[in-house]
Image (cartoon, rainbow, N blue to C red; front, side, top):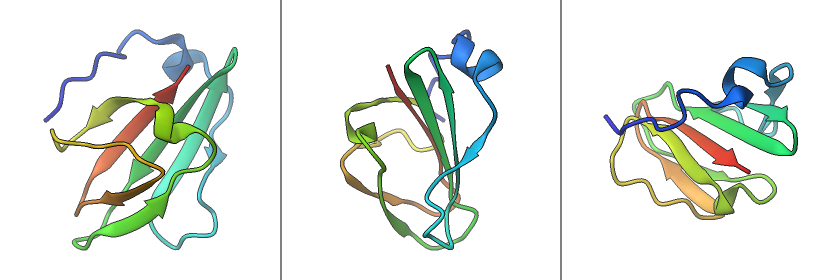
Length: 91
């Protein structure tokens, strides 16, 4: 599992309410939090198949905070692998 350097980021504990993200996709389960101009996008693939997803806004320029796969490449369109969780922080 990849290391999570964002354990003490205020956006995680103090960010505004959870906002549904990628509502036009049946998969993955995705939500966003915001705080002081920062954004956090969390993507969860609960299935045994890969899912292609186009990241909203400028998340393709964000930083990976958490992933259960080591070799994550952030681009405008990404592939979530089976059972992957990915958190992208944009600051």
